[in-house]
Length: 107
Image (cartoon, rainbow, N blue to C red; front, side, top):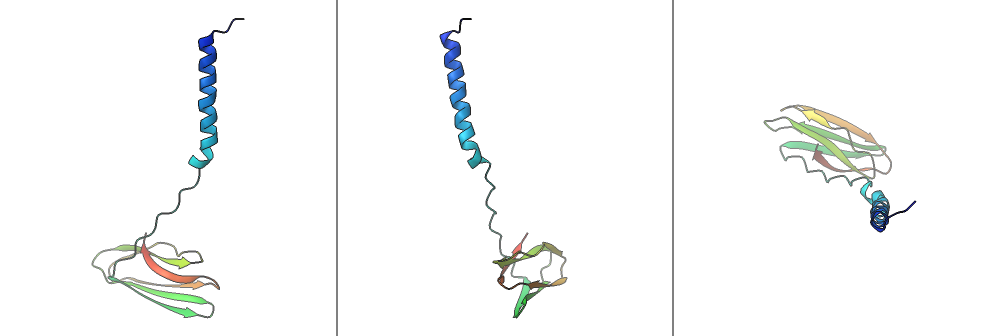
């Protein structure tokens, strides 16, 4: 069987490209870093209080529009995302030893 020089060159080039893609694929497959969350509007009031077993956050939507907010926790799991209509409020208590209140964010 006779293999032409052109066929050999194509095979080598293809192998080199595939090898380069295989080496770079773990970087491409890395999980994206989460986008920073925007601070909730100032018309959404928030009051938090520390407790020996965690902290509580009282939230009230004083805006004229519906908002979606969540509590961002440093060194802990953030709250779920809540939809609050104008005038609606929410109280959330986070039981934690290491976590602390960071801010109220839109979601």
